[in-house]
Length: 151
Ligand code: DAT
Ligand code: MG
Image (tube, rainbow, N blue to C red; front, side):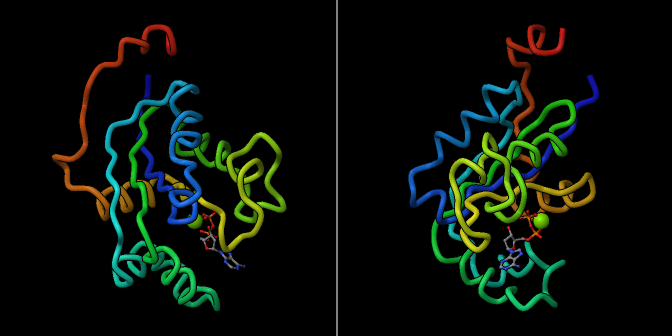
């Protein structure tokens, strides 16, 4: 299987709303593998680095204030197609447009409080994993479910 990794973060609203286990469950039950996890309060400067692609947008400052306003659950998930399918599990950026069944569709209401982040492609996944985690924080292991998930 062609394994890839993506960066997934539960934003301060998701943590405060006690949605950590609900969100982790959706990735875990799908068959994806958790290879890194930690809870951190990012500084404003760190949030600006994370969202550097959006620095020209009018909501950039508020977005970075929000991301640094409380604990964030940072994770790396591994699996075949996990970058693209992770985005599918998450749903559209605006929860009003997210389908029911998606994380944002089921659990969030407005774009400014959409509870979760997921890398949008292979390049950003690599960059975001490197920004949030040291190499030694990523754990390589064989899951006993692999032969049942992948055949
Ligand atoms: P996504 O998080 O789905 O990758 P994005 O990268 O375009 O979306 O934007 C990052 C975050 O910025 C998004 O999760 C919520 C916020 N955001 C995006 N568009 C916004 C808007 N029009 N108004 C307020 N916040 C917005
Ligand atoms: Mg994005």
